[in-house]
Length: 161
Image (cartoon, rainbow, N blue to C red; front, side, top):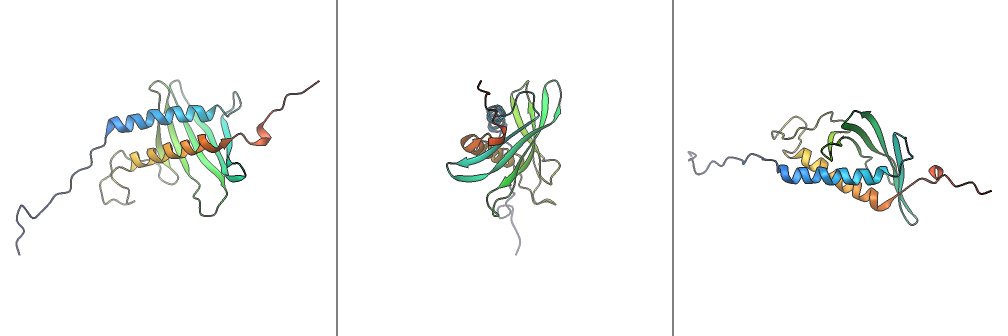
């Protein structure tokens, strides 16, 4: 049986939506800035607990690992969680202060996330893997903003005379 030109369908090549991706990175920048206000002044690490009333979800750390004039690189990781079923996320995020955007540049064991991946590929990444990882960051930061609290040991109580 011969295949005709009509019966062979080519896969449509993935084209990233740069406007949506830019908006996602801008929103992540704002979320990160709000979360980092939990840090002590002049401290390279912000750590906070995730909890809702009596339910403890875990602890998250944001650590500055590199800084330059207009950018910085942060390591975001969940260092403890309340359930064995949870995976502790670990993302490296590049923050561009001049452009007011934050973008995931690596994820746990993957050193570099490509903007577009051929599919199939060696690691079985989706064609839009970078967009998906940045969308995950948005969800995770939103969760942290909703349930994040400064750990009790980091609270400095004023001295009363």
